[in-house]
Image 1: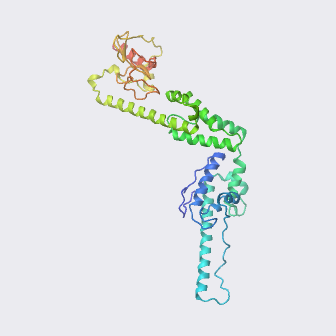
Image 2 (image 1 turned 90 degrees about the vertical axis):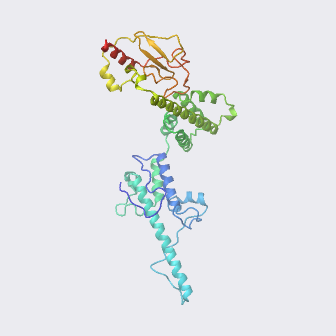
Length: 376
């Protein structure tokens, strides 16, 4: 596809391209951008409040929106036509009207052609091929006709589309995404269900999204507090606000934990660190150190004091984190964890795990064993 530079100022100088076969969602977004561009160029026609939207939107839809048809004036001909023997003022008014009509028509033509170029750049011509005349190409095809063609052939929502749309709720969001993207995607999922005559109600959207949250385990506490809310307050609007607030708190805790972790690292000195307390190597380096045949891990011995560490049978200290379990980095404990899970308990120690992870970060442990054996 080629690109062009518009002589007009559009809010979308380049439409979002549709990669491959168009679908309902892509066409909706494309149409929205086309309408925005047409509206942005002022016109007194069609009620005067919608710019050149009438050049792009199908006439029936435009009438529903505005209540007034978008009708351009007839071309005024090659030059002003003076009737009878007009005086100077009348002649001047005829010339002014002629120039104004010609200017209006030229602007409308420019708007139409530039928006049509944008459309043809955004959609592979393969999907508009039946409208492509052997002689004139798309010159005599209206933008509204091109949109109607795409909607008719690629916009219908099938039963398969509806099932896929519904199932997508389980994977539509990850904790790395802003939660606002989830709400926007859910709006589109609900729109498709309504347009496909199998509507997902607000309650269904809420409940399916709640199941997704429970499955991911990101909002364990937030899910518990949502369950005990009065039924009257469990609307979709309340649901969005509740989890938006909880997500802000989750991100705040992550930020605080990371700041604490970096602060602890910044104040640590080499004198305080033992070579055996180095972080685990990247997997590629670790793989070259760990033997193919590995001895069983020594069982850690819990110290009597309430400390974040334990001592293994061969005298190696291991440090405890509620989220990640036992490891060798003395700067990684429940209180300094840089990547805590939901519900992370900063006061958990090796002698009081408080329901935290009770496993050993084995790869790091193997490396310590190898280092100890090599010294021996």
